[in-house]
Amino acid sequence: MGVKIRQRNGAWWLFIDHKGKRKAKCVGTGREAQRAAKAAAEKIQARLALGEDLLLDDAPAPTFEEAARRWFAAYAQLGQLRVSTQALYLSALER
Image (cartoon, rainbow, N blue to C red):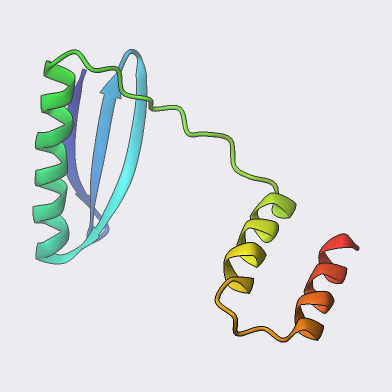
């Protein structure tokens, strides 16, 4: 159980080992990414020390249809789409 910070190919990575599972997360490149990785590692390590259960299993990825409908609902609320454009997008989603 632990959190490690490593730099690979110029990018900073967090490696989290918990309950026999390992999760890797790229934080980014540069000094800011290094600081962010260290801060995140400290927070995660503190949560592990308190005995909190980390959910390392990612939720299943949404299907294309779910993601597209969610995007359409959010985009249509902006009020920048004409009614005809909304109908065209919905028609494309249905096909």
